[in-house]
Image (cartoon, rainbow, N blue to C red; front, side, top):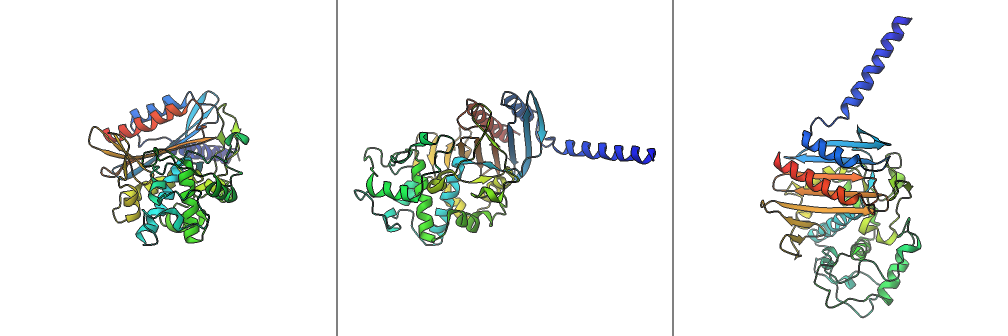
Length: 361
């Protein structure tokens, strides 16, 4: 009997050892491991960071978890996080798909597709919503995010958006045509695309993007992925409710994993995906180092490399995504650190430093 107990103990120890070993980032360089560990050690307890490193079209996953003062490598590439404003890239991808399918033109004015009359009859194109040159403010004037700071968009539904369009919308002629980042603009774009197709935003995502690229854990519906969801943390490191984006879902309502987002990144390396290629075309010059595509920030590196970047912030999460199509490199970083904590700057730095390390391998 003791012999069998001894063998069982050896088997369990071996299984645990293999599980632990599988979480180690053996495919990453020591520089990359050190970069990640150096940043995460200062984050709050219960922080998780999930990273996909893409080099020459090959993907490696690594995860790190902080518990009290200890950090450990974990396998969390299938776990789901809020991705915040990276959702804007997906909204613009839906726009690109409908454009390629000849269901609309990018320069069409938005009043062609909605029944709600626009106060003052401003001329705003679909393209201007996608590249932040519409002149719309960051948020609609009839929305008060401080009224529900733990879930600021929850009560802003279609009725409130339509009231804003009919009664309060104003476009500054001095700001129109210049780059002015607007959650309202991409939320409105998502709303319009749903009206055009007579489908929900979730249905459009599943039909045109998620199912096409086998992004099986990506959704706007938390009920679908509740067993995979990592809880978000507020600025003090306490668990915080997830955000509900309501009518503004196109600006930041998607949940996803590093595994799924790496599939989306790899799809950009395939030139046959015309809708993705369209999102990366420059549509507006911001300054000497940055252009804007359809939501993507296009970064012109001194090396001559072109990076396409977007990040995202919600109350309990920070996310970043960078791809270099020409070299087939990329970086996806998801975390449950509040997008409004003092740690987000170091996450910005980490995503850029990791991307540079990938380029230099």
